[in-house]
Length: 274
Image (cartoon, rainbow, N blue to C red; front, top):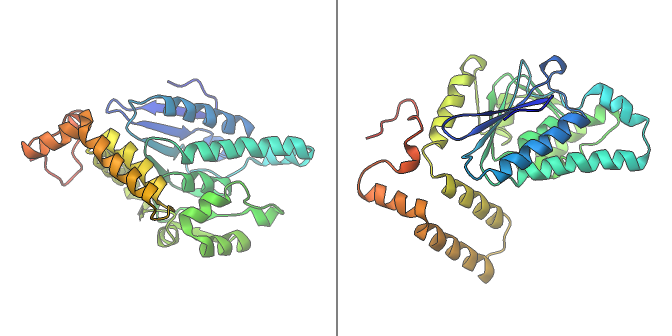
């Protein structure tokens, strides 16, 4: 499943995939090649209806140091139209990740700077170590977090985004959880065990229902309480109730048994299958 130079796609037998940023010698900083490979990888994930969810992770000590310095040096010597092309590539990556049909969970350790915050913000959920370091560092080098800004504002709110984009302050995982960038943070030594808990919990859920719920929440997040939105929500529950997975889930609940989609997945630690 892997023919990339800067990434690794690792598929688990239970039906989820881990998308690894794989330039640990460069602290997973991204350049034009990594951005293009991420776009291709997300296209493959989007076209695979069998995938249940995606983990986005970084190999080595750091999630991602943001943009690669050598790439930025090259960009400084390019004209406006070439820089615009680079920006559009990054925009395509961010929008494709945000619109991915299956659920996404970012797992953050070490540094997450600049555009890395965009990747995290585009995911549905994110967890990390309490000593992880985050920074919207662009203004320190005379730039702006332009392409990632809609997703960062959506993740942490306008007021927090103004502070961290204008000051370029660093903040840790505990603060990232407080402002909503991370759902949870954990001691670094315990992060991997908690990743497994999150994975096991997601594997309990109907793959179809998670995708439908993601679409539903996208429609309702900023939607006016209109007749059209009401009809959309009513049609959504009606469709999923008569679907194969919906019927299986209802039957399993009433018959006090496990639904078919849990057959391949582990039970979260501390929970019982009974």
